[in-house]
Image (cartoon, one colour):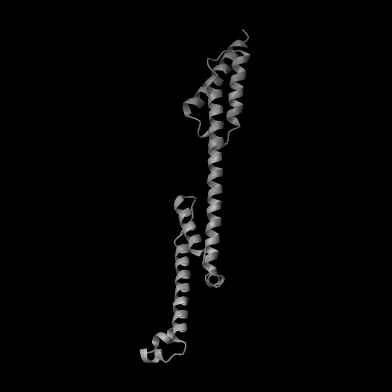
Length: 178
């Protein structure tokens, strides 16, 4: 094709099967343009995240590649490998996001459970009911992860520690020997 392009018009007219050759050159250029467009679409994916933008870029690249011939795909193997990596990275990011959302829900439920147990302590008396509520709240709080504990509001945690101190004082008073 380059040699043909370098020819003069007179030289081009002497080429046998000129029409076939010109058609072949146009066909090759079209195929080459399709590969370049697909490679450009793949390169446009950029850094992959679990986002609408990443999904759109990956789908656009897949669409640009869908009608390529096996020869075209072979010519752009590296770019197709990058597309496969991008698809895998998207799925990984999606799984991590969903797992994180699930973990957030679990954390929220655990924090709410402990908060409710602490708030249920109520007025502290030196009796088995108060002791049971305080112990249940403490056990639930201690079972939290550090990240979950950090989500317990300070004023709620103070209710627990104050209840424990109040109960301990009441216990000391009740068991004091005179």
